[in-house]
Each structure stands twice: as C-alpha cells, then as structure tokens.
Image (cartoon, rainbow, N blue to C red; front, side):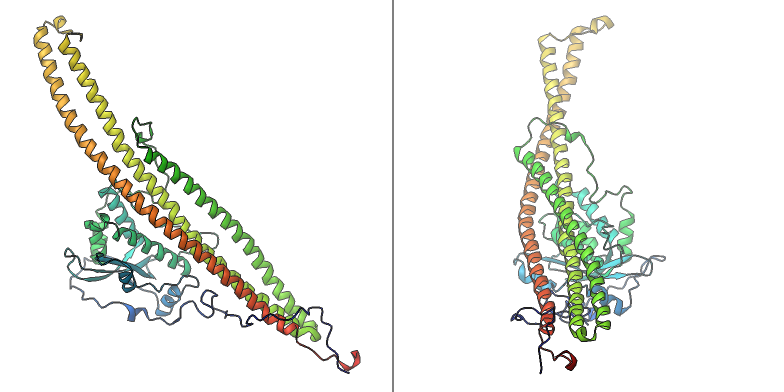
Length: 485
C-alpha cells in the first residue's frame, strides 16, 4: 500500500508564482535575473568616441596613466548594483535644443601609481572650444581643483559639491572596490552635470581647461593653484557675517532655517538606514549559518534529504537577495542622500559669502553716516576744536577738516554704491541658484524614493520566487518505505 509522507514541512497548496529564481551566483534581482548589464562583456574600448589627438610632447617626469587589465576594468564597470546605460546621446535627446555642452564621467581606472582616474567625455558646439569632442582622464584632485576655481570665480553662486575624498562605510572600506568606484564615478558625473547645466559656471575658463587639457597640462594648471585648499563637506567657519544684520531679507533667513532642518532630516534618514543595514547584516550572518545547518541535517537524514536541501537552497538564494539589497541601499540611496548633505553645506557657504557682502555694505553705510554727521557738526560749529591750543587758526583748521571729511564722504559714497550693486548681484545669484537647486532636489528625491521602492518590491518578489521552489519540493508526494506502511 502506498501512502503519502506525513512530512512536517508540508504546507498548503503552492501558489501560482513562478518558482524560477532570477538569481544566479553573480546576478542581481534588479533586472529580473542574470547580471545587471544585459551585455556583461561590454567592450569599453569600442564604446569610446574616436578623437583626433593633437601631437604635443608633454614635459618629462610627469605621471602616465597606466590602466588595469581589461578583465579588471570590466569587473569594475559591471558593478553589481549600479547600472550605467546613460550615454551622451541619451542626454542630448533629453535636453533642450539650446543646450550646447554635454559632459559624461565614466570608466574609473586604477593606476599602478596608486590612484584612480575617471574618463571625462565632452561634446560641444561652442566656438570657444577648438574641437567638437574631447576625451580626457581626470583624478579626484583635478575635480577638486575645478571646484575651488569655480568658488573663487563666483563667490555669490552656490557651487555644487563634490563627493568626499574618503567616504567609506563599514561595508565599503576599499577605495578600489568595484561598487565604490562606480558610486564615486556617478557622484562626479552628477557634479559635472550640475556645472555644465549652470548658465554661469559652464562658461568658466577653468572648466574649459578641465574638459580639454591634456593630462600633463592639467597637472601644470593644478600646480599653479593656491596652497590653501578648501575642504569639501567640511565644517563652515564662523565669520563676521554671522553677526546680526539690520536689514536681512526674510527669504534668506527662512532658507537658512529650511536648509538646517532639511540637512538634519537627511542625516536622520541615514542613521535609520544604517540601523536597518545592521539588522540585515545580522540576519545575513544568521541565515548563512542557518542554510549550512540544513545541509548538514540533510546528510544525516536520507529520508528528508531532498526537502532539507531544497530549504537550504532557498535560504542561500535569500542570502544573495539580501546581499544585493544591502548594496543597493548603501549605493543607490545612502550615497545620493549624502550628496544632498554636502549640497546643504555648499548652500551654507554661499549664504555666508552673501551675508558677508551685506555686512560689509552695512558697515560702510554706517561709517558714511558718521562722517556726514561729523560734517554737520563742524559746519554748525558744534564740533570741538583743539586747533587753538596748537597755535592754529580755528577757521583754517575747520576748512581743512571739512575738506578731509568731504573727500572721505565721496570715497565712502562710491564704495557704498559699489557694495550695493554687489549685494543686488549676490542676492540675484543666490536666489536663482536656490530655485534651481530646489527644483532639482524635488525631482531627484522623488526619483530616488521611487527607485528604492521598486528595488524593494523586486527584492521581496525574488524572495518569494526563491521559497516557491522549496514549497514545490516539500509538497511533492513521496512513497513510504515498505517497513513503514
């Protein structure tokens, strides 16, 4: 007599969900299975635009760019959780016809000298560029140099932030980690997009140098930079502009308050995300051990071996899913939020530079008022004079004093007018950049959260698919041994 096994793992009827798990050992659930890229053997050399290189010998003793092996480059660019299908042609189609400068940062490469460089591709129709297309390689120091030059050239504008030079987490501590390099590349690309899309920053001469100069020319330009380098994402220094100002526009006060609150909230998000990541790491460690225990159990339980091994395989697939969602959360959510934290600091810097201009204008205006009041006292004869004690004619001393005051008043009046114009320009620049940033922030965060939700949906769908296979194995009828009938 045949009887179905009264298996303790037996569950209800299997669901209609496809039992095929979209994972393989190197895959990701984001695109439904397999490697992230549809073409894992993507040829970067073939994708590079052809470029007519001007023959010019570089000075001696300058570093050369020595790339990784081709297989290593492919590994870096195939990052598990960071697809990169956007091209310059795609950007051209997405932008308006008036856009005449397009830049993309791609292909990070490690060099034998111990640093990483990034490819910067530029296409433009601007007449100030000698060619329509450039492809150069730039180090992080080159990007830092560019930002410093932009900040020096445009103190009244909000200069987009760079990613921090060392932005490691407990999960990513290797600066040559494939996903770290990919994340850094995308952050640098974001910086360049913000710069070239800006109606003022994009016409800076230093940007042209950055986009078109040869490696040795870029090194020479960078060495000419002043020694004092500003910290990216560092603490904002206290300045005289932090003092209470008399006629500060309410808009700027409200913006500073909002900026502070927004930065605090994003930091809170990062703290919570880190707590979630810690719990998932503990779960990953426990699940890995849990899967091993089922395999060991199957070795000693021949009657339940198929069922136990099926459960072990489902746990292993769930661990793969968990690893992927951990990296996605770190690289696709936390890193962009960190960039907005740095942007808040950039807004603070620009706000303080704008406040300094207003503070200087108010101080000079006060000094002008004092000189005018002093002139009125001298003219009315109310001002005290010690000229007679030094044997000077009081009238002549009064005339000399008035002459001096008139000159000071003229100079201060001209300075007040200049500072007033500077303040108007600073206000206009700052307000325009705030509007641009707020609009970008709204769309960026919306896309960020939608992407995070989509990846979590696929994460849970993949877990369901992983366990569906076990359900089918557990629910399969079995014949009982004859001695147990």
